[in-house]
Image 1 (tube, rainbow over the protein chains, first blue to last red):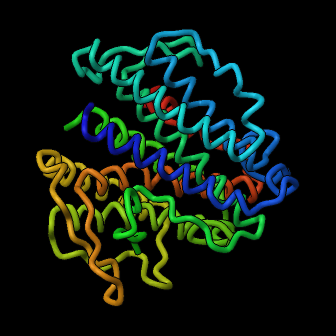
Image 2: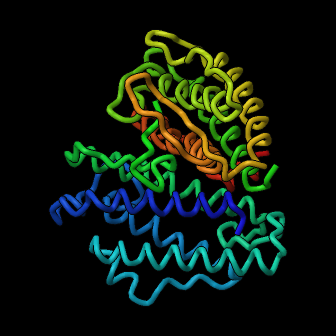
Length: 171
Length: 164
């Protein structure tokens, strides 16, 4: 896989895992409390579920398949453990779909991808930009929600922190 | 340049420009109003996005990092920030193009004198800057909404494709 796609995907998923970790310290009420940010119903749970669910959607787009969420998605998306395992599966699904797509297109990032929203076709590079922008956008909302819920030690979920402790958030 | 990186940078330029343009409709007080999110105000958040593009261009090109535009009290107009954004975009694209052949090469950066020297690959640095703007634009959108702006700009990467 293209080196930049590989790093971008790994860093993006790692950052989302960092956001899931402090959720373990929240009560169920806090995890499901509506806040003034994020997709409806504006809770940490719904924002995380939306972000991870979109990764399955993106994977199916690259596989040129009609989007079908995993059968147990709705049952598992309500708990932190369920979301963690869904994220693992979503990463695998997206990585595998990208590998297949890039293999079929000879690595051409200008190759077309059908995008059901808007019923349009876009380039693979544009689709990837949307994948990474989407996750980053909602991850920031989750960080803000954690702050509003009183979590003071927020995770440093930046690509430079990936993959290890030797790297620190930039000034 | 790698087409993915090109698209990410196209999107960063488009979406940051559009966020700044939306700020034209605000009063000076609103542009500088403090919020408990991100760098603290729309002005400071957008200044930070642009400032990061400039200093990361220096870091990736292994140049001495220029004085930060984020000095306390340094105020910029929307037009000033738009000009700096164009400059940051040009300089970062040149740095990215230069770094592309050395993605696995390790960079060493000391973010502040009291901090240890940090190491990461040029690929991680490029990925960081390519998504850094998206991170802070999400904060800016929240501030705009809280200031009563109802017609929020569509900043996603697909909107960028349609808008350019």
